[in-house]
Image (cartoon, rainbow, N blue to C red):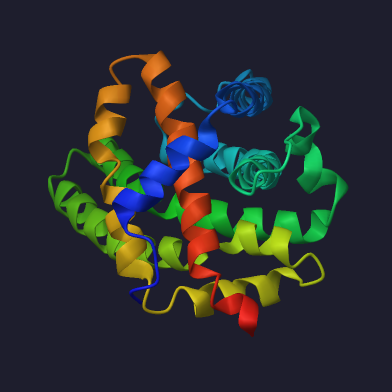
Length: 241
């Protein structure tokens, strides 16, 4: 375990790897966000996303979920861009479409899994809250608090287990989604706490970045690069297997 880089070392190395690459990473992230926004905007015209009824909310969730699964494939390309920068290779803006042109079935499978996990905390909050708005019964507020805590207790460890899957998909293109998932869970055994601590260390920067859009444009690539270096760091022993 002592051979692994510390959090401080990973962050310092990330700054070096980002030198000269901020422009393409920020541009790629903005392009993906714009595409995702317009994809959801098309469905917003049906006035489903702003409704406060439970049935309409669940329907809008289903629509947003399907759109998010599709746009989530772009994260494969973003991951490829970051990995190229981390490994000293030349990135290209066209890399953001990599998930659609290579192994789309695996990319969609992983995106489906990611979006399902990400939806859990949202539903845990929103469904009881809408029930409270409809009935005015305070018990739904208690249910909401309990369900949020329960969902986080599930979400955090599961998301940590899945955190390396996109990197693994790029490193092992011949493996299917199930094999990637199994490998991702295996390599994160005994390493989830380290990654969780690394993620928590970015909270102050995220809070500062929220004060301005420009701040977040700097923080997000910094986080992405650090996570890519974390993956490369933990995979060093794996390369011998």
